[in-house]
Length: 476
Image (cartoon, rainbow, N blue to C red; front, side, top):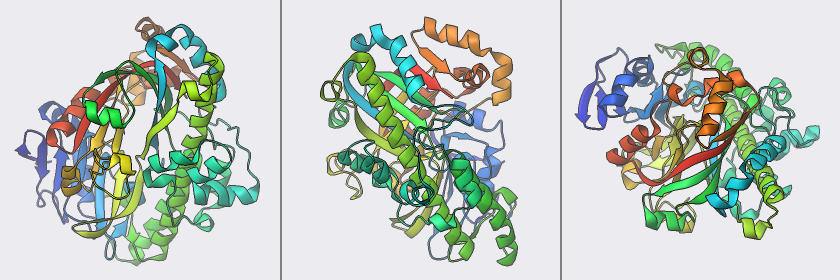
């Protein structure tokens, strides 16, 4: 794939690089990251996405980009809300896979003596792994209406958290327009019992320490300081969202024939936004996103309870409160200078800049918090969105470090038991449901998180605030 260099951190795939491209592709990366990106088919997928009807400005890719289903993980595509399309492959299977960051009043010294017991308590409190069953029990009527329509609001009303947390969740924890009747019986069946579960793969609950504060003013607004203990929760809509995506992809294949849409990759199957198929998918996708918001809300509540139990602290003294909660795999209607658009973010994070009215008032001066989860060995970052992101990337940035090695390769390269021991020697206690699953998530299977974050910081679309170091981790 022909790629032109525009600057130290920006590359362009010209619109004549592939037949049918309507706009160029833009990739945010430095030299080393671009060399890694070239090793899979993700650049081809960026060019394929540029053929979507109604696409606006460019097919965008963040530095954590790697090959995915349809749109690459780390891809961002905006289509015209009046004349464009919606593509389920541009959102992904794990709808609203996202990350929640919580801060505490604790220092590392406060937690260190009780860390093994804390990790054990978290593992008991939070169901994890393939097929795990949650502690939330719903009636059939509530299953179809509660978390699917209300999202995190439903969870808070059930006692899983406080009302003031909702303002610190993207879209206040609820996407309006969810349609429970657009969700298939199979999706409800797959999601049944999974509310309040972590899942498998790269999903985790991680106990961390603020290793370094890089922007003191922003960190103070967010309630963070060096040496402080934080907790990061990464999970999504589980089997519920996966089935919503599968159902929609099947519907979209037929819809493309009906509407005369031809694309170079069937995985990008789409439908016009004013079509019944698009309306059905959007209603179901929003319901799955709300399910995920409710899921993370429940997990945060049980995390707080585990801390209180092990450390013998009152909620007030513990001070475990939400910093922010962001979505990764989602499509949302947003307004930019180009007009009203449907922004697909797949393995990409919203990064609204300062002054945006949707942000809580306290964040409007610094921009939206952006949570970039790394591997369980290498740490994570907290950043904030910028005005430049609003101009260049539809208020979007990277979501993590991005894989460079398949899960099968990682398992051939290290045994989970040995990895667990090595991590403990480095001060990271990890508890996993599956040792083979743990091996899949070894740090060497991912890009260097610092390189990814440096690229978006230097490019100006996100600004670093703090670096977070893992000390305990729960994996599915």
